[in-house]
Image 1: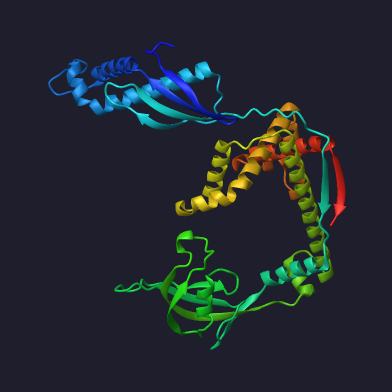
Image 2: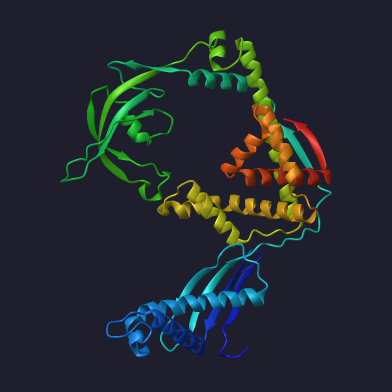
Length: 420
């Protein structure tokens, strides 16, 4: 390839990304500069010259920074177009541009990070054995759910002159004390003691107070605190306890059952709870079976977890969970294995659905929406419009494709039903 042409070379790649180093020769930059100067000369209005008649030397001086930016953007655009035309790459997003070097008299160089659609071929898609283990619904599980129902309908009654204990709802103000500074006015906030809403030493200090009392104390952050920078450190605080409340649970009787929903009695409520727990047990069994199958498929076909996709997923979840920048590395390390499994899962399912033509069709979508509409007592057209407005049709389509893909995959393997 002649040295006067834009050149590029692959510096790294995996099934989902390419890294290219690009060089734009001085001759191309000079041609871009001449083009930019002519455009600015035609459009510029400069004092002492008619529009379009300013000398190029004057235009260069007046619009030096704008022309430089125009050259850079034009060179990046031409380079990217050349790569698309010649490489056959099919990017799934705009490339990331890094390490730009743009000095006078030197070639323009930069790196492109390109995300491409992975192409995975599975040589083995059947012959596996998986277990569908359905957790048993126990009496203890039913009692726990009924207790949750009572807690949701509970009231909180104030207690006078008592020290709080775990399970009590307290209203407190906590102000940080710094030497030589007045504490900022804090606002009362509420928490239930013993539920991990506050660090243990702070809760201990609160439980030593009675309503209306204030104490200054040093509290130590635990060694396993979520914020690494605070682990093992201490802070002086002023704690004011305003109020203590105790939870009052309603009786588990027919009146509560009617309040919760359309249940005539406690027996009907308990039956509904059992039904819900059984449905959840079946969902758990289905999810476990699918995870087993994906794991075996990925291992049998050596499906990779491209780091470009893993990093993108980690960043997406960090953004969704609103992870602060200072906590990102800790989050990324703990989430790495989960992200790798999720990436392999998506690659496997996409490869199978594409190879077997299992993508959800318009008729599949219509049928599922009609089913959902009937369950909700509404018209399919209204539900479709609602899902479209909420931009959830794509989500439903992906779910249907996944269902069809797992149905096909399970038909190629053996499933053993197990009751835990």
